[in-house]
Length: 149
Image (tube, rainbow, N blue to C red; front, side, top):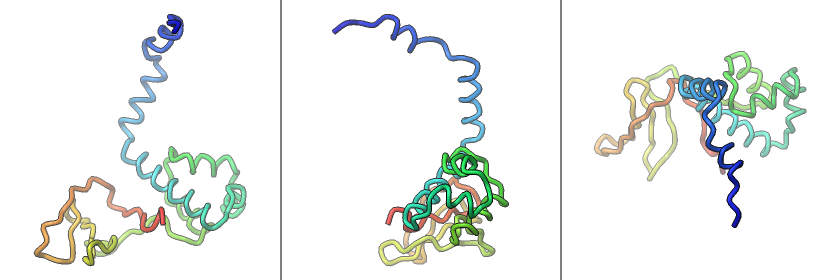
């Protein structure tokens, strides 16, 4: 097997300033980038299951196909106006915001599991249960039920 010195030098070069800025940007914005990725994943799933093309979504939202491509990349900082346009175009909710202190997530082992907005944990409807899980997400609950069903 031949050793390629040029390829090794190219791979082991120091990072450029653009690459350093990109890494810093991702580090500083990791929270909303994660939410954007989850929204894009859910939207892709809905488009696939409903048989809606990206071009059709662009027409329904009255935006360019390039804008839909950006949204589906999971790297866009979506505003509420854009999210509302998406929800109207697909006829489904991507995000739900609760008025009360807890949001039903799903049933697990015949118990209802809730996400508490007052405490950073998941709790079950059974007070005897010790099932809690640390949660570091945002205060808006991204609806992900049945995303891969």
